[in-house]
Amino acid sequence: IEDSVRSAEYVKQKVSLRWMKVLDDLLEREESHVPLAEVKELSADYGIADEEAEQMLNYFDELGVLIHLTATSELRQYVVTKPQWLLDQLSLVISDAEVDGHARSAYDAE
Image 1: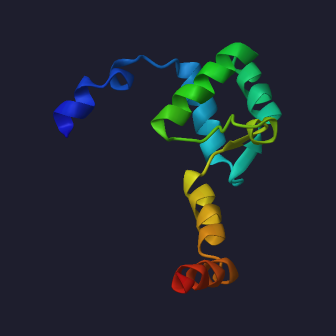
Image 2: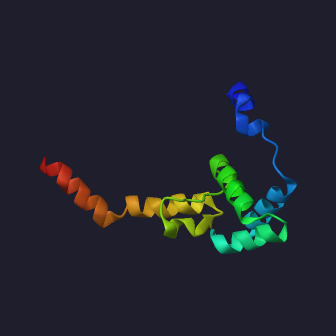
Image 3: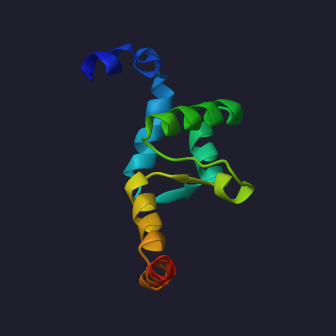
């Protein structure tokens, strides 16, 4: 596993100190998710333009450090700074007793 990780391209990529400062500031926040506009404002404080901020978010998303979903315009407007929070929220939907009970009865009928 160690050899595999060492050979991965993202491990070899150099990351701007400005990107790391933005990431540190985001991860220090109490909120589990932050509006994209605030992330771009914070990035601008470190001299990062919007286009570069998008690259930064994509990179950190690929690493799994934060999550920036882009499937819809609504999802795109937020950056999840605590990925475990998102997983917890999704698990609530998946394990909802009413939904789960309905799904089980549908399978039992077969």
